[in-house]
Length: 182
Image (tube, rainbow, N blue to C red; front, side, top):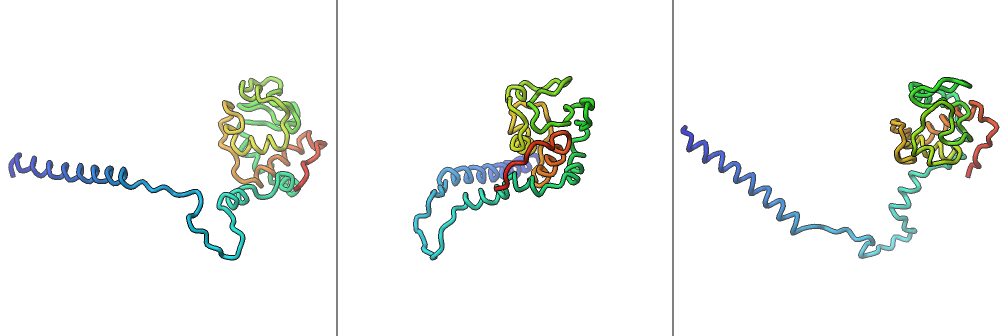
């Protein structure tokens, strides 16, 4: 086979591929489905309608933080803390590592630990570390405090967060009352 035949075959393959891409783009432009916010025909099933948003919200909310903390196990929280132990210490007067010492962190002012260089975002956030703030921060630190230096991705499970907060509460903060279980 000579070069001219190979060029014709390669050209045909490329032309076919170009044709498929062109047809796909034309189809995407011609047909762009829109999903209405409300169903066009309501079907009465005799039961109360529940929106998918309400179902998703109820599924993600789960029990309140107060209920989770009331049932939390500090010994399980100490096991969860092993993920944190590479960067933090928990001893009274303990040294700072990559992250600050977390002894008596519950109720302590944000960014107020001695001898540690906190990010500007954390010190600007202000306030004290409440149970709710700790829960939100442990869920996803970068979402709770934009610009934090903490590189931890967060704890997805609410029970893990509650157990960890219960463990941290045993470290010099046990006099702080738990939030009400709703």
